[in-house]
Length: 190
Image (cartoon, rainbow, N blue to C red):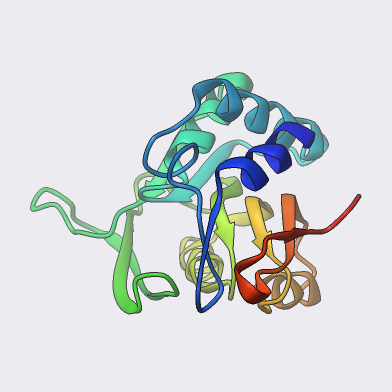
């Protein structure tokens, strides 16, 4: 995804500790045309997956997941970080956030994730894989089948991608960051 990589280099900001800030175009202010292009690329990469539901975690994965759901005419479910008073009979797990340096519960109603589902997980970042591990646990609890995971940006210098691939999960990352050493963004070349 040339346009995504160019945008990361142009508008991404690096912070100490391996943090890449892309809130100008992905996870605070969003570029809808870029989100559409991202969804088209994910759709192409997972074309043979036989997915029937898109899954994400609030909040930054919602935009690309919705775009993909629109293109594929599929429902999109997002794991919530706060339990609504109206939610009953839910699946729940705990996830650690790398950027926020805290743990939080994520929940999904069993009504929207069950053994009949073949799900594709879409998210903005893959770093240590904590959100992905939480989704794997929720999918396992539900009896659904995880057919793949798509990430807009993967940090290859953190071990989430290796962990998921070693588990045999079909992982697609649209831009892979090799290094953020000295706050310089180094992208993996295709």
